[in-house]
Length: 332
Ligand code: LMR
Image 1 (cartoon, rainbow, N blue to C red):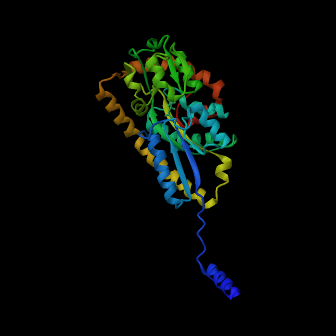
Image 2: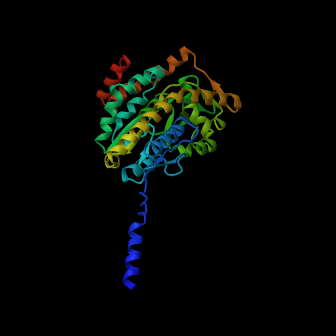
Image 3: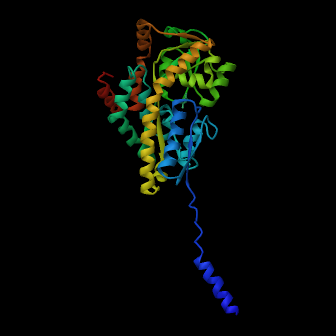
């Protein structure tokens, strides 16, 4: 009898459907420093949506915006250590990774418009820079656009001399450090998350950034005068740790690559409009004075900042400058 019961129970167990062992999803922590309501913030959320869809939930993307997980410098260290898997820092912040060459993209008045920027980054320049990154154990997946920088302070910045003696926050690039010195100001590197407070309390007098960043960080509320100078460009590189990326199953990596390509097209397609709308909102807020440079004033800025080009050769090397010059049909 006992044997019979045992056999019946064993048969029931064998006949029961095997419990479905839920496979834990692969987690991608995507950290960045701007709000969700910016081109980069929206791009990160679009990537999350597409990555989770294309991998059928096998990948879960956790987006941490607005420096909630890491600040600028920390996030790069975290990527190298593997405590975060994906970032999209401004390329002006890449020197600590050992790739100063990216700073060539910060040269003032380099790209005459969005189309020039696009052509350079989609051509050999963008790929050449990603190769440099690969040698450091970091894989570049895409470039995301965020338009051109404005400059601001609590006084109108119309002529180069207006910068004299001002402490200006910069994000990291030595090229930006140089062009702000060319006009007599004192640049200071500072994490993005600290800028609003530093402007408000007078730790720095001014800064540069794109309209979407001014609006979403409320910089325009603590700067009396903003010059819509568009003197330099802000772009991001979406990067991953190469070990992490190479260690993913090939099918998953393919699905993520597709998600990234589509998120990139989306981000780059909204960047110009997002910045245009942000500028309109800043204007309508009445909280700051917007200034526009005449062509002659632009030439004054260009002349004053020109020494940065000569200096840049020693910083970023001739090779990347030649590549850019060729792509843009300009002389450097
Ligand atoms: C900055 O630090 O000013 C920018 O790089 C922030 C960003 O990511 O747009």
